Image (tube, rainbow, N blue to C red; front, side):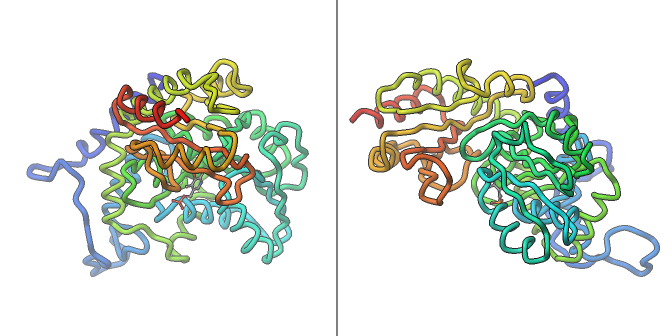
Length: 368
Ligand SMILES: *Cc1c(COP(=O)(O)O)cnc(C)c1O
């Protein structure tokens, strides 16, 4: 992480201080109220929780600091992604989406935007670099992609997309604002599933949209208020608590992932290994240029489905689950969801377990 990112993470831990009065709680309170004392609408303040809630304010203050841009909280990553897309698309307009990114985003575009007359174009992440964006209303980027970990040159693609008149949306879930800053590379909106590393404990779904274009963010806020896709105050509180340790957890997770990937190199049980921090990874140089760390995800390809499943079930320190970024190391064979990866491909998300016991658990599960 760069000095500015560490500074932001440190400031985030004290974001409430300036607003505290004598006797106020240091920890953010959970405010469970649907409505607020409102004798006069004109006097401002909170009115009704579909429009705003004090516990969302707390988590949005943290996200706004981390993103260095106004941020809006959503009840899941998909709620944030659909809000950003709905704020940007128009009937007849074209949107370009990665064909190998998070699959629910693709299905959402296919099942809900296409029938509204949106021209949905899917493109492999590797082809973004040379693609022609003329006529596109939205260019949607995911980098590194989940699960294959392909990296898109965000600055270059955003510059070409904006020159063509498109809005640029970046899904930054796999990196978080501490490891990658798409808004500084020309994105109009960042979307993320805070379900993953930001909340970090596998007990809540959450998401956010961040952006510096006030008119566009106002549309995102309107979408949230009118569609009613709002987070619960309790969930916001869990994410607030999770974000306080994000920098600490990410440091451990990325360091362990780097070390485990290094030790796995050349392992005879693997047909392929992907970690962006390995110097011979095809996207290593680009990742080094645009990311402040190489993340906590490792792609492991076993010879076949049976060997991959045997590894997952044998390893006592890999949660077999379809999520990532949490405190527990987790892994899954992504082809079981139809992702375009080999049958033996596992997305391993390295958690915060002390590295040596974790390495022993992983390496002993790989012996046939
Ligand atoms: C998990 C994920 C999402 C969706 O987040 P939910 O909170 O599950 O709705 C979106 N994009 C990426 C890259 C993800 O990994």
